[in-house]
Each structure stands twice: as structure tokens, then as C-alpha cells.
Image 1 (cartoon, helix red, strand yellow):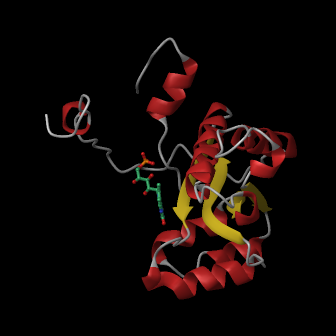
Image 2 (cartoon, rainbow, N blue to C red):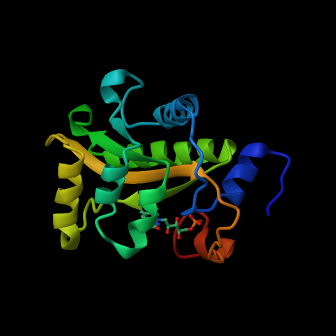
Amino acid sequence: MYEDNNDVVNFIMNRRSHRKYLNKNISDDIIENIINCGRNAPFGGKPKPDCQVTEYIIINNKETKERLSLNYEDRQFIKDAPIIIAILANKDNDPKYEEYILSSALSIENMIIAAESFGIGSCVLSCFINYQKHIKDKEISREILKLPDNIELIALLTLGYKDDNEELPAKELRSYKEVVRFNKYDN
Ligand SMILES: Cc1cc2nc3c(=O)[nH]c(=O)nc-3n(C[C@H](O)[C@H](O)[C@H](O)COP(=O)(O)O)c2cc1C
């Protein structure tokens, strides 16, 4: 457990992906609060509505969750997540920069940290944006969510109160020195 005087640092440093959840409802207010934190992340372009690419679908329907698990072994847990948020990018609002993946990723991380602050665990799942091998699964996911052509499916984010009985895999990070350089790559 990392401890700092700064709550935000603590939430970030102690966050893990959670795949087991209590059978406890997340209030609509909290969901709205989490999504509003996502909406307030940086996005490519001017700070105006027509540059805001990221959109969201709140999934609380059992059948939709089951279908989105796509029968993947490592996705079965999403069936039991109280809420799944599908993170979408409206490409019409990003005509110039094509940086919608970065904008949506920042929105996702804001939501993850906001969820942590409410004691809610989360796990982000990619949706095969550039993954030709899984193109069919991407199409199936798009069909389940009835997405029009201008809407890209970026990721799914599960949300649920943490089950303390969940055993988390040990986490090992590359060392600071290995990943951080000064001014250029080769020093
Ligand atoms: C792009 C991306 C795709 C991911 N896809 C999955 C996934 O399909 N299934 C899953 O259980 N976790 C998925 N995760 C969560 C990672 O497994 C997890 O974040 C990583 O192992 C680091 O562990 P931590 O989040 O507990 O720190 C994904 C995370 C990212 C960023």
C-alpha cells in the first residue's frame, strides 16, 4: 500500500484492475459524477463542444453484458460487473487531428481515478481498434451496441464496488531508470 499526503497520488498509486465486484448497486449520481470526470479530461482541439469526441454508453443490461463478453475466457467477468461503460469516439468531432484515441484514453483514465475515489473498482478492456485479427469481434461488438459508422468503439470500462476477496496478480513495473530518460532516447 502506497501512502502519501496527497489523496490523488494515493488513488493513482494504489489503483489496480478489479475483476470481481460486490453485488451492490452504483447510484446514478455516482455514475454521472464518474462520467463527468471523464468528460472533463483534455481533448484534441479547442475547448468547445464540437471538439469533444468522446461519448459513452452506460450498460446495465445483463444480456448486453453477456453478449459483449464475446465468449472470451478472459472477459467472462464482465457479465457480473454492475455497470459497463462503452467509451466511444465520435469521429465527426475530430475531422482534423485524428487524435480521438488519445482523447478517449485520457477520458477513461479520469473515470478510473474518479471511480477509485468512490471505492469503485474498474477494469478497462480494449475493443480491437487496430487489431485486424479480431476484426470480426469488433464488428460483433459494434452490432451489439448499434453503433453508426461515424462512431468508433474505443474500450469498455467495467465498474463495481470492490470485492475484498479478489486476489490480484502481483504487479511488477519496469524500473524508473529503465523507462525515463533526459532530453533524448540514447543516454
Ligand atoms: C489497452 C488495454 C487493454 C486491456 N484489456 C484487458 C482485457 O481484455 N481483459 C482484462 O481482464 N484486462 C484488460 N486490461 C487491464 C490490464 O490487464 C491491466 O491494466 C494490466 O495488467 C496492469 O494491471 P493493473 O491495472 O492491475 O495495474 C487492459 C488494459 C489496457 C490498458
